[in-house]
Amino acid sequence: MLNDKLAARPLPGTPVGSFLGGAFVLCLLANCGCPGAASTDEPPTSASQQDPSPPGGEPQPAAADADDGTSSAPQGDAETLRAKPLLEGWTAPAAAILLTGEQHGHLEPCGCSERQSGGLARRADFARQLRARGWSVTGFDLGGAVKRNRRQSELKYEFTRDALNTIGYQGLGFGSQDLRFGPEKLYEWFLRTDVEPDFDLTSLSANVTFFDTREIGTPLTYRAANVGGVKIAATAVFGVSYRSELFPGGVNPDPSSLRADAPAEVLPAVIAQMEAEQPDVMLLLAYAKPDESEALAKAFPAFDLVVTAGGPEDPVGDADHVGETLLLRVGTKGKNAGIVGYYPDAADGKKFRFAVVELDRFRFGHDPAIDDRMRAYQEQLQAENLVEAEPAIVHPRGAGFRFIGSEKCADCHDEEYDVWKESDHHTVGFKSLTVAFAQASDDPSMASRVRVDRIHDPECICCHTVGWDTREVLRFESGYLSAEKTPQLMGVHCENCHGPGSRHVELEESADAAEADLLAERAAMSVTRKDAETKVCHLCHDHENSPDFDFDEYWPQIEH
Image 1 (cartoon, helix red, strand yellow):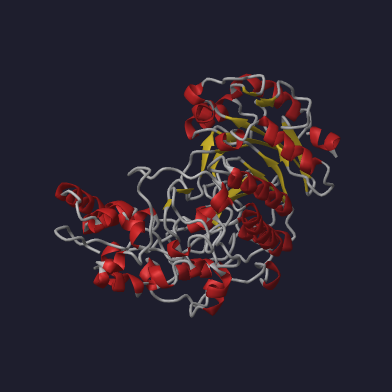
Image 2: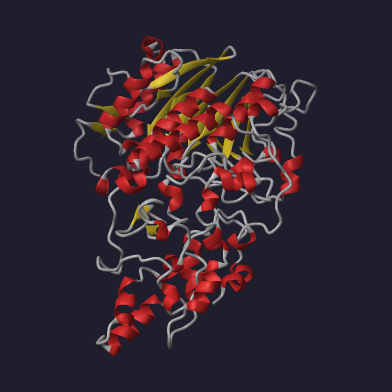
């Protein structure tokens, strides 16, 4: 097999505070900044329950090289997406190539909002639907699979590789964070899967070298893949424009361990090898910013297709012409998938048709194999206890500031406490991470969105418990550990918005606290309406998790 791969409260005297934005409930309820009406639109619950789209092949207009009509429409209304046929007007191509990249750790929509698109399970169903039409389908990914470099990131990278292989991808490039795992870890993953007979995904790079040798089997310089009788030669490069993300200051400290040559220096020889395969399609996966990718397309016109990194999150699906080469942007975070259809005998001479397809809830179900892999991933997070195992960080206010829970706040701030206690932040802030809650919900769409418990996932509990840095997904010292060890911190509490309360309580309960210290701490704990709107709520109610969140609409529901 290797040889085959090688071929190729408010405080006294201070403004009113807010409990709104420290963390969100799973943004599925009205108080969470999500659509007020429950969805009555249920996507297919599994790939096997979804009928494939109508098969292609009947007489259609001639294919064009870019297809706005089937492009992603992430801002479109739900009815439009529901009714939009998949790849309307496309005839069956000789080969269909899925093109993706810059997933940045988004394995699937977290379930916070019913409007969220994307996910590997839906992407797999996209590929299934195409194959059900009789299309020959493969896939290539730019890289950029992860956003960070921690143990959870490692698990995500392995998940992604396994999922891409399941979908039928044949090549995966490297992004900066991928390479920051280091050659030892990347080589370890290669060895694990290289002995699996059904694992056909290869890591590709023409300019990245591990251990100063190209003779260890990974990454492959290029790959020649046969897809329905169409030969596709594909390679990948890690661009100079992202070098500083990989090497601090742009200087490689140890080229003998991991080397990234300038793409322009290595591509001539690689292209010669690829052309010797006599391919029908030449593909370059350029993990580079658009200007650099465009320059590569100009310099190396042998490539029919160049896929670039650094493009918009939701591209419209246009293909830029660089001479005869198509420069493609396929989106980020796994919300969309690019697809190229190859039509060698097109009457108008345009051999390629391109679209970016939004992986929405209406047209795409969940592939059971990928869902099973997600359950195994969550079980691994629990087994390794990453919520507790990852090192905690000191809160910006200092090491002596501890989280104590909202019950202590009620001693003085009883009215404010009552407002919080009746809020969804308290009542379902933590429960909403469970399948049991989703299945008991009046919202019929929840059961399809929350398919696995997430109570051991740091990236979920950071907004559903107390004491985490929600942006960096790191636990503060004294932050939530587990339901058994820190039950007072489960859910969304006062301290999510006001910060750790230990020092405030100590001063208020002290008989000899200096007035200046009391006032200073009260001021530090205060959250004004403006603060809530501009500095707090968006930390969890962001565009991704609460796309319909309107501060002016939801503030009155928790104002105190």
